[in-house]
Length: 499
Ligand code: HEC
Ligand code: HEC
Ligand code: HEC
Ligand code: HEC
Ligand code: HEC
Image (cartoon, rainbow, N blue to C red):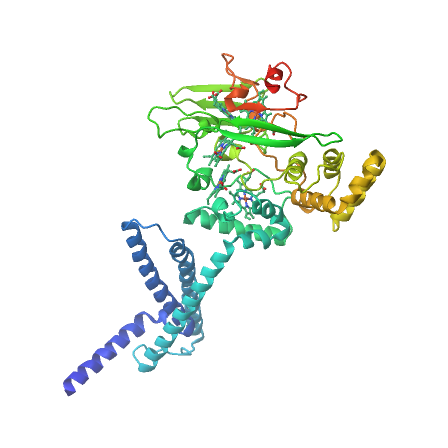
């Protein structure tokens, strides 16, 4: 009995000597001790997460973003703090040694008091880690929410948030297109988010926010998660109601069958067709643009499925400046969700659904003029009512009474349209964020943008081949009741238009 006690005592003393001489840096003072405990606990949790991660990977489960978040960001941060504390504790120790001071809280690792304290410290650290973990979990959720993206930086994001909230993607979260899945883009986004919040706080950002967004995640990682290119096929009937600039606001309709097409890979041996010919991986189109908006295209290189290269060049191309880019969804769908109207489109829609009254003479014409001329202010509706009244009094006095009878709802709807599309604080006006999905400019004229950046017949190969500019390659026009579009003459369209 006594022997056993003696042995235990001597081994205790030996352990104390050993620890006491070799590893005091870990618990010589409370700073170092706190650091040690933090390190031990985080390493333990990291190990647990690592096992979970291995299990998920082996079992083929999707990696959980929250596990990633805690494993890749939160715990390593704690580990760094722990190492920092340890280092600080060691500084304290060395300073004391220099001054010849005995350790302030000599810690006896083998005493019951130490064990009790260590238990308390471990418990508190653990609770803190759990608390902070939950907090960062919530914080993470919050920074991923549309509210955070849109309203924390209200002035900056309000236009995009408004455009998004009325688009086909209104139910898709900002982060699904702007960040997408995976940890590395998540970390990149949060880092650039910190920079952006800073830019807003210091009022150091450009108005409007420049587009295209150069560091946007490639479309195949975002759009293609929900939209499966192989599924696109066939044609789609598109109708655009329009109203003329005349006294009666005469209603018209443009109807076209758009050849949306697609890769058609479900059918053995079939070739890609139509507009989504472009998304077949076998067809690659690269282009060189000389402006930051990617509107002025000088050269186009097409790799054909047979492995040939066709090289088209603009007759005006003189230098080799600019940037090369491979076409993807965003070169056509550059406005999938931040969709801004042009005045004529917004008015045609409002007149069609009846939120503007087409029985008010000259409304289509004068409303467009007014929308182009005014900017919203604190009381846009009054501004619009007064201007509208003045225009009618001067130009169409005979119609003033008809206008007055419906002035309030008319002004309210025009206010909505103006405030939805024009944002003076961000220098956003009609056409600032133009869409590439057509070939009409901001005045509704044929234009040179969109598809016609390449498909206007202006680019040729050395052999004189052009990029297809056949109207029928992209659509069949069923009805166009307006014959005075520029660009129709000589295209043989007149007969077509009157069918
Ligand atoms: C359906 C995908 C999608 C969603 C959802 C989305 N965006 Fe975008 N966003 C884009 C694309 C694509 C661009 C780039 C446009 C370009 O390069 O021309 C963009 C551009 C922007 C820009 C730059 C300015 C501009 O209009 O081009 C801002 C700011 C922005 N988005 C904020 C947001 C906010 C805030 C939300 C959520 C309320 C959001 N986005 C939701 C796809 C999306
Ligand atoms: C999280 C899923 C999701 C993502 C990511 C997404 N979309 Fe969509 N998209 C949708 C849904 C849902 C609709 C609406 C379908 C409907 O209302 O008929 C839609 C509709 C569309 C439409 C048809 C719009 C119309 O006028 O009918 C286009 C074009 C489109 N998306 C392009 C894109 C592009 C380009 C991107 C990448 C920048 C993208 N989408 C990213 C889910 C998504
Ligand atoms: C060459 C230009 C171009 C490219 C590249 C392109 N699209 Fe389209 N897409 C169009 C046009 C034009 C339409 C028809 C728009 C309309 O209905 O007004 C369309 C229609 C769509 C629609 C609606 C389909 C329907 O049948 O209603 C979706 C969804 C879509 N595109 C998604 C995508 C995605 C995702 C990508 C990238 C993988 C992509 N597009 C690449 C031009 C393009
Ligand atoms: C960056 C240049 C570029 C832009 C922008 C572009 N295309 Fe193309 N497109 C090409 C090239 C190059 C080809 C292959 C050459 C050809 O078919 O003449 C092609 C082929 C096509 C084809 C297949 C034609 C055929 O002969 O079968 C269609 C349809 C098409 N594009 C529609 C569109 C539409 C619609 C848009 C706009 C929404 C558009 N493209 C924008 C370069 C472009
Ligand atoms: C490279 C493809 C392409 C070619 C070539 C092309 N278009 Fe288009 N066109 C489009 C697309 C895309 C739209 C937009 C469809 C939509 O509004 O949804 C469009 C829209 C139109 C519209 C409807 C405009 C509106 O907003 O009401 C008319 C009219 C039209 N095109 C006429 C023509 C004529 C005429 C030609 C031949 C000289 C032609 N297009 C050549 C792709 C093309």
